[in-house]
Every structure is written in structure tokens, then in C-alpha cells.
Image (cartoon, rainbow, N blue to C red):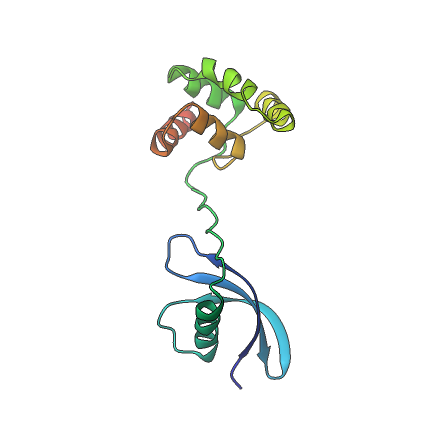
Length: 151
């Protein structure tokens, strides 16, 4: 028996593709099952057509894709990160950038993380904040990160 779309709970784009991940409840052989359905343009299934009709009729908001984590970048130690930022001329700007964070709680947490973290992941929000505050492009940051891995 074919699956029947019972309810749509949400939509989210899939990074790096033209597909949408659909959080749905399907009826399969008389049993409701909540699952993810990958909506791919041109699919030829009843669920695809039901979701296509739902999107057309409701114009739902579709969440942005989660950022794709670059698995080729390893975590850095504080020593590695500070050395590479120093060599690139950015280190002296980090603490003033953290102190400039307007939200008191966010500022305190950023300073604590900068001061006490034992490692930094490339997708850490603090790293992204520092990168943006210092006007370092994503490609420049990736290059710096790769150089720091060798330190």
C-alpha cells in the first residue's frame, strides 16, 4: 500500500542540493509514522505530489539548510589559534572585539570561551564571531586554520 501524507510538521532545505527535507507524518499500511521525506523536484510518488500541493496551497516558510561542516578542518588548540592570529596580525584585535559585544551575557560567555576553551572547532560560533568582527573572509579563515593545524 502506498504511503499517504497525513500531516506536515516543517520544511528545511538540504545544504548543497535542490532538495527539501520534509518532517511529515505518513500513514503506511494503516499506521501513522512521523518521518523525514526528501522532496526532490520531479519525483513520481504520491507523497511527492501531496507535498508539492501542500507547498503550493500554503506557501510555508522553509528553514535554511544547516551549514555544512568542513570535516577536513581539525579542531585547534588555543595555542595554535592564537599563534596563527598573531602571525596574521589579528590577535591584538580579538579581545577588543569581544569587549565590544553589546549583550552583557553574550560578551561574558565569549570572553570565558576565548580564555578557557581547551580547543576550538572550525564551526564554533565564537570563531565565526571573531572572523566577522575582524573582517576575515571565510576563505582567509580556512587558509589560516589549515596553517594553524601544522603548528
